Structure formats: C-alpha cells, structure tokens
Image (cartoon, rainbow, N blue to C red):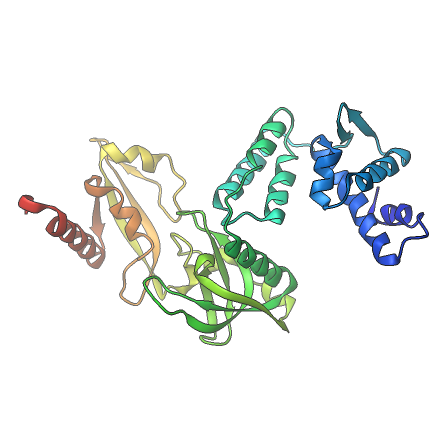
Length: 342
C-alpha cells in the first residue's frame, strides 16, 4: 500500500476530520513497514503509535481487506514482504553499519533506533532476528538526544544552527556560534559524532564541533543554498585528519614510525587512515609513514595519542620536532610516576 492508497483507504471513514484522516493514513503506511520487519502483537503496535489497541485492530483489518498479505501467527501479526536482495558480503556490510550505529549512538532516540531496525531488517534470516534483538536497548541521555535531532534537522533542511560551545577544560562556553551544517562525521577513535560546516557568526570559516560540546542548540529561520552542501567534499576536508578535526589544520606532516615486533601485527592488520604500506624488517619490526594534519605549533595533535598508546613498542623516527615532543611526553610521564626509577 502506497501513501496515496493509505490516504484513500483512510478517507473511507467520511465522519473523520481531515487531520485525523491524515494521521490514520500515516499509521497505515507505517504499520506495513513495522510488520515487514518482524512479527508484532497488537499491543506492541498500539504502544508504538500511542493509540488504543482497538484502533490498531481496525488498521489491521484494513490491511487484511486490502489484500496486502497480512498473516496472524498466534497473538502476533506479520506482513509478507520483500527486503532488498543482498549477497553475503553486502549483508555483512549492512550488519557492520548497524553495529557501528549502535555503538556510537550518543543517546536513546526513537528515530535513531528505527534507523537501526530498518538496517537490520535488510539482513536475511536468521541473522535478521538476532540483529533486530541487538538494537532493542540504547543508552538514555535525553539532552544529547535532542541535540542529535536538531543537528539532523539543520543538515537535512539546510537550517542555520545556533549553539554555544565549550572547549575541553573551559568552564564557561563561548556563545553565539551559527553553523551551516554540511556533514556529520563519526570519529574513528571514539565513535562519537562531530558536526562539520561553515560557522558564520564568530569565525567565518569551516569548523568541526564535537556534538557533546555543543550546548543550548536552536534552529534559526535562516536557510542556506543547497549547492553549498552538495559541493562540499568531505574527502578533501578530512584528507589530513587522523581523527576528525580535518580542515581546521594549518598544514600537514609525514611522521615516520617504527613499531617493534610485538606491536607490528596490529599495523599489518591495516585499517589506519593516511598510512603507507608497512616496510618489514628482518627482526619483525615494521616502519610506516603517516600523514596527519598539524596545528599552529606544528604538531599532529590527533596522531600523538595513537603513538603514545603503543608505549615503548613504537619509536618516532622523524620529523625532529615530533620526535622531541614524543620524548618529552615520555620523560614527563617518568618524572611524575617513575618514583625511584628516575
């Protein structure tokens, strides 16, 4: 049943006001999607729509009478339907996308969960049932949920987003940012959302903002040209990014790293951005070049935590300023926590 067909069927009840007809039409259309995903009881459907079970039962009868393949299995209802055909690798890619969505979600959000369910519903059985079950529970942080909705609305409707922003370690936020949202990126490091766009009020430049540091969000009436979003190339903006900051860098640097045999396997597994093909040594060590953006101090701030995370199993070979900073961090760690080892 298409949206037009659903509206036509809803209009059959001529005693209903037009607004209620539209609501019922939407419910009939949405009901088909829900029942194609998985079997559901009338009470589950009533809870989903926030209506009485009698209303859902009338909708179910309308679907049955319309010849849309409604099936009743005990207390549950399902609709015979087709999902896009996926080969095994495509199905696994859909599953991987759904799991990444699940792990990076900043808050419980009904729309977000429905997106997860739609992705999971594309999988063949029995993987579909397991994936659907895995998407049932999400963490609950309502403030971030609202922020996520406003960011999505700003992006898709090309509305200017106003907000305050608090930098790390900053007690009072900077106020009055106004952003034209061009893209939402998920960090490779911590799987959290970052918002990218043109900040027009304070900087007049492309900026990247971590969602959790954006406060008091509000949509302005102002809109902006669709071509600005369409022409934005995230690949170019993030080309020097190790994490997400991307185009906020003032330049880039190539860092040469040597990983000992005990850590080399992680590098050989691959998956790291802007990293050259590893050069293997006879002792099992590997050397790689990594391109990363630098700030005004000339240091690749996004890359440094990755390097330090390998402890003594990595050595920075070049350039000199990055090597010296890496060594100074290690000396400071030893000074603070090394005790008698100094």
